[in-house]
Length: 477
Ligand SMILES: [Ca+2]
Ligand SMILES: [Ca+2]
Image (cartoon, rainbow, N blue to C red):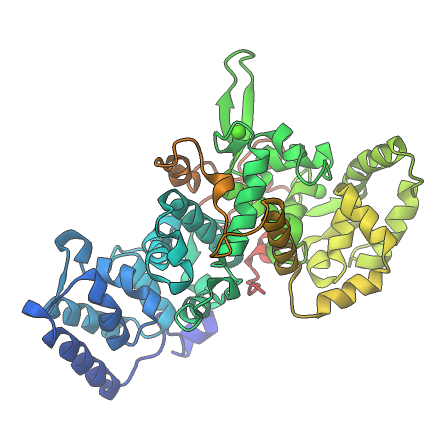
């Protein structure tokens, strides 16, 4: 990038658009406003204004707000023309314009989760594939938060909670948002917006969260997928390596209990059900890297395998001793340094899901054992991701369990609380995106806002490796 700046090829906000195009759009905006009373556009009319600006349809709510429409209830023609002029003069590609619009003119060069709320809420309110949700208001914020959490999972490869322009450009987010205006069936938009995917994630959480306070603890999570996960791994999930660890004090025992929020659960489930996704590999790597040195050592592998061995013995299954298992795994991963496994070793290997399941998911490990490993790799070569396949299967099951579908194909009964008027999830959700930075095993800060700065284990040279690995921008699948 430094080279690019030196030679003048670097355009932080995209390349300059031509003036002829500007005038065409300028006239188009004027002609929309001239059909409106007092040359003012209300939010319902902003679909036309947005299209006249040459923006994707579902930028309309953020655009309306960026022009002050939320305060006045309308936007005047001159305000819109001024705003567009500024966009045109200073922001020259879709990503930089999107960021400018969503940050509502605040001088920020990154997006926060709440910046996405008007956009996703507007999809709920106006997308033809979600009209059945209109009456079920208590579902709105749950859907909105699920979508935003999925966006961060895929796009925010730096794990900072802040989506940068670079991350936006390396992602498919803008093209998926654009797809929404052509695709009437929201479930076809499997990236981020699918209602069925939301429904599966939410039901899975609801099952675990027995007291419905919208947080789950270690014991709740242990019940996930018939106790498939090892307790050592669950401890790591709650350690702060991958969650920001809300802590609540237990009144009776005075002990501090760590809880997982709904949005953290979204990340967990996505990572658990598709272990080939770059974010999932990072997620499980963080969990297994007990000392936070950026490598999985033989000791760390043995620590997790030990519990797998005990569990298999307990149910009378014959299992490989650690040394043999280790040989198999090293054969499979082929790490650059045979003594330890790095994040990039795992990202390069196509059989990484088998690697992780061997160390902490008994059910999936036994599944893999019964299958030809190359068959599962072939499965992977077809178009559907592991996540899409999981979500689709689970949705079918949920619908079947609930005893048939309603006319619109959706049954909301499961999640209707006793007082369905109140959106109980919202207050919790709204504070979920903030919280503490990630910590490593020693409770020292490992990941800090706003950059990926490793502050704690500076004695390890491996830190460099960590940062490099996380900084490499994998575009989401
Ligand atoms: Ca709970
Ligand atoms: Ca380590």
